[in-house]
Image 1: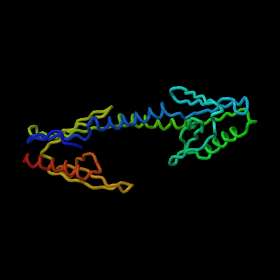
Image 2 (image 1 turned 90 degrees about the horizontal axis):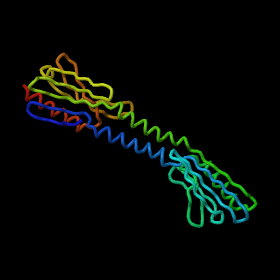
Image 3 (image 1 turned 45 degrees about the horizontal axis):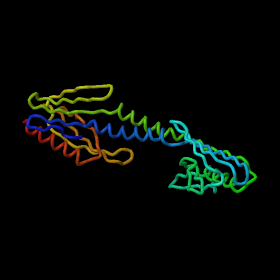
Image 4 (image 1 turned 135 degrees about the horizontal axis):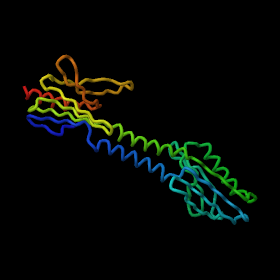
Length: 247
């Protein structure tokens, strides 16, 4: 929340700005598109041996945008190894000109070890004429899809509220703005006699703070919760000072 206007007769508080949700949604969209378009969840390795060191291998990697083909001469293929990075692994081909990634990063260690073993067996056995291996991790596309759904949820479910205290009209106007709904509620400033900051804990033991306007008759007007005590105390202080100026 932030104060967007503060004068002797007017105080306006906004719970969210357009950047609060667009920044998050754009980040989710970027991650989702990257996962869908630039990762190669499906890869196929095909090798054909004509003689002991003559032949060729072809790697075909596929993603949402299409396929990418890479040719490797059998004479330059030295074998394969499993490359580990944290909890993920991938198979890389060892060639005379450097390492060539074959499979996408995966958490399935056993499968990657088996793939590397099959490649090494083919390289070291001249009698084996054909090799065909494939890895299908297309379920990883669900990761990109989840990020896109999260971006849509941020846009659709966002709820921006504007609290306008107007001393000239003696009103508090609360405007609730969302993608599908808009609502305006008006209160009389005469009915609001104070403000407090309420402290609560959720099921995960996280502490949340909520600014509440005290209304005659014992009811409360609650502003959105945050985990920032400093922010909520700043808002509460501004509202309290404003209410005292109107008396």
